[in-house]
Length: 628
Image (cartoon, rainbow, N blue to C red; front, side, top):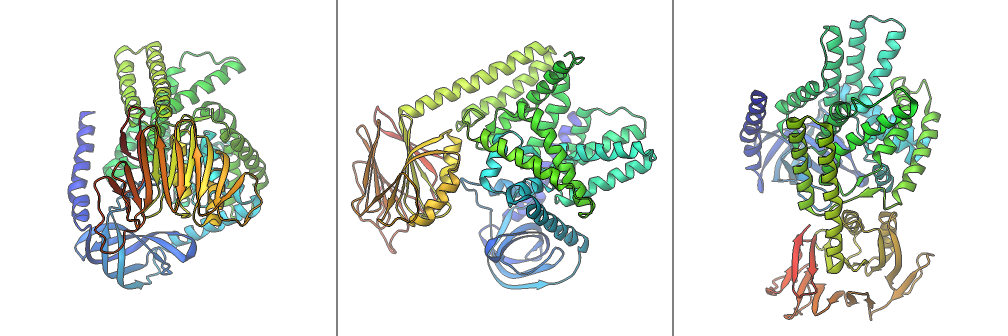
């Protein structure tokens, strides 16, 4: 263990010194880049995101991303950029792109490019053919099964979530079966076990069976574009069947550790990958922790087998629960139940889709997938609308305490080797989590909280307190609703009393309707007097603005400015082009400052690129500001 730990730390530090630091030294500078296209992601409007592997200024090896209008390049082509700016991927409230790309060895992105040239090499023909085949299969899934059901099957077979509706994805994750949308151990195990069962029935030689299994593993990984979770599962599957070939005993814990070590030696920054960490935690839960905890449980009768299955899923959920809270906005608490009943159905649907893909559509069993997927989507939608099926935790202190609890549980297991002590420690950690979350929630309800959300000069305000929540959108940007949705989700806010739209009301209304599908909304306040949509509960306001009075705070809007009062405290959010700054309260200035403006006051916050923070007003007076 000491040798392996030293090897992993050494590899990480060496990678940082030799690969990471030389590349990030170019950040915020201008230079040239020439690299081969290794991956392409296409977006609406003819835009594409290229992943390039090449050299900066012809000197430093680097892997970069490049977002631009389509250059009609394919994998294997070379893009030569004579002049470009190197920047770190930006970290935003919606998405931590810096950590996401860092886990894949991408440390900079290219912007403001000039003198571009594409060299058509026609290499990587197999990779391009696989990508086109995958896109054709995903298109056929959606044509035969419908948009949502086809997108769900594409997620289960290829791990492709890019085209899935946001609300469908949320429903699936709240239902606790989100892991079906990532090609990992479950997918690999189901596919390989089905293949090996068939080969055993027709009495194929074990060495030929092993070769065919390898071909299937490569095919599955290539179809999913080699996600690290699938690579980890493939390595472990090799250990499992190689042990039978060489008449050795396979151990899940050793196989998992060896797979993690092998991956991290070649790609040390994979430890930043959320999917990889959750995959390892889930595999440990179902392959190591669950067998240990259920070892002495009786399994003779049907209800006893059901109890064991539930216990296995519960152990797996407990292993990934703190990490899910750390990485995602919310996590399902009914996954032990849904994984027992729904995952087997999803596995059947996935096998039907996989057979269709392997045979190129010759064997068409997609009607099975359609029936199962439609049922799963209906159940997921019903589950997602209940507030008792999922939890979230905005407090970083509670999440850190839960992660420390995992270390304590591991120490208890190593020292005492007693299942009762382990169960008691886990129960204490869960009780601490739920009680602490309730206390934090009560404290938030006693105070008024103002969240300023958005990107750049766009701003949406969420005011909450005493179990009342109001949303005032000040810019009408199409992505503002996404920021609001994330904030509500992270703070377990399932009901909004008022939503006020002050700009671009037609498009903003459509965005909020879609993003807040699982949130109970009350009154809508919309600027103007036209009736653009036939929806009940809409009130129109004019130049005079509006006033909302709640139990613990009041909100006023007029001429682009929002004033929030709570007790003796007041906060004003107003356009930056205004000349007024209130010295007796906190002023937040959003939007572009006038050119050559000398208006900078100590009592004001100028957003520019610094959105996404909370202002907490207390009854005792004063306020606190917390970055989200």
